[in-house]
Length: 162
Image 1 (cartoon, rainbow, N blue to C red):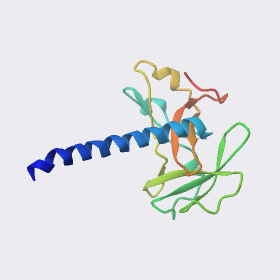
Image 2 (cartoon, rainbow, N blue to C red):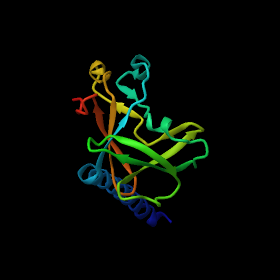
Image 3 (cartoon, one colour):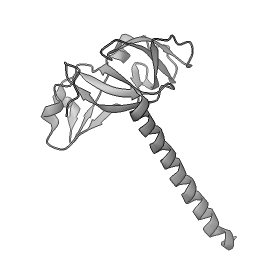
Image 4 (spheres, rainbow, N blue to C red):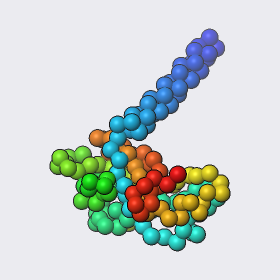
C-alpha cells in the first residue's frame, strides 16, 4: 500500500487542479460569450447592506414571481428588453419550455420566498461603499444553460459603476 500512496496523492492533486481549471474556463466563457442581463435591485436601506467591504444584493425579480410552489432548484425565465433589463416571466423546474426571446437563470431556493441566483454578494475595495449606494441594477452574464456570473452594479442610467 505504501508504494501506491504517492500515486494516489498525485492523482488526487491532478483531479483537483483539473476541476478548478475547468471551472475557471467555464466562467471565462460566460464572461466572453454570455448575454448581459440587468436585474433590478430591491430597495433596501443601504446602511444595512454594507458590511465591511461587500454589499448584500437582493433582486426584485424574485418578488415579482410566484415562488410559493417553486421547486428547491430550477430556472427563472426572463424576457430582456433592448436595454438588457430583465422582466420575470415564470419559474420552472426544467430548461424547457423556452421561447426564442426568453432566457434562463439558475436558482436555488433557501426558504419559501427567497430565490438565490448565486450572485447575492458584491465585493468592492474598502472605502468605496459610497460609490455603490446608488446602484439600481445588478448586471449578470448568463449562458444558454442558465449559469450566471455577476459582472458589476449599474446605476439608474444602466451604466456600469466603476
